[in-house]
Length: 191
Image (cartoon, rainbow, N blue to C red; front, side, top):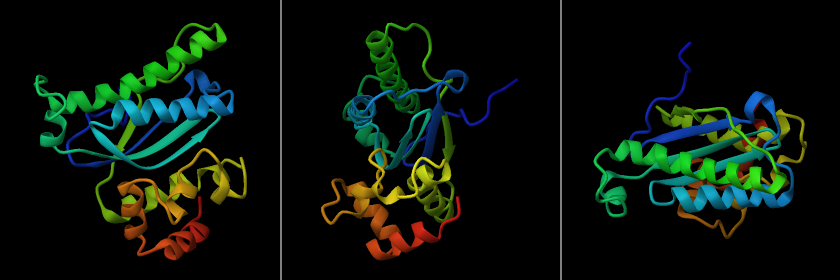
């Protein structure tokens, strides 16, 4: 049976990337694991995409990205012929690095994640808004915490801070016409 949501990542597009542990298994075991996963993804994909939102839960994750332009990617990967494959490969490299570290740390072998990682192309501004809200409110949906605004492994606190760390977070705020509208939209969004 053909798996859904595995088409190649295209240039200059928003995607909701997500995955879960193999057979529903846990993928994050400690605070350090969550931080290391974010580091792997941030470092290995910075040349091909910007991260707009994320949420990491014990057994799965969600990341909202926008892929970069061909010009930006070729500035780093000039020798590669198929730039779209480079994008997917960088995400695979990040997930593989994390898996290898977890396997080494816990003396385990085999896959950590379902393969391949899933992705949904965002095709409208309405879908983009819904994806941002869904990802940032995911801890409440899964009953991890009702206080999703302060969940430590999602982007919501960084997006809401007056010192948003990245240009992407500023773009998220602009999408909602300000921090207060973003907070209001989050509180009203039904997961």
